[in-house]
Image (tube, rainbow, N blue to C red; front, side, top):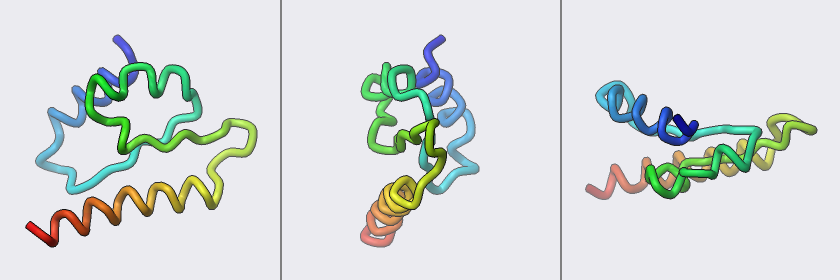
Amino acid sequence: MPKAEAVAKWLDSNMQLISSYVIFDDDESEGLQDACKYSIKDRFVHVDRTFGLTDRDCARAAEILQKRCDKDTRQ
């Protein structure tokens, strides 16, 4: 099972526990492989395994989470 499919299945099974999320992955090729197919690409942050989690990665994650919060407050 592709990683994106496993993540999507887990999310489907646990969405009642989750208000928002970001997916960090250091394997861009596999991480993005099916991300579009399972509608999680817009929640994906690629982390370069050479450098680990960077300020830029954290800023991208915060942007993803903020967009979701903004969307929720408008509804």
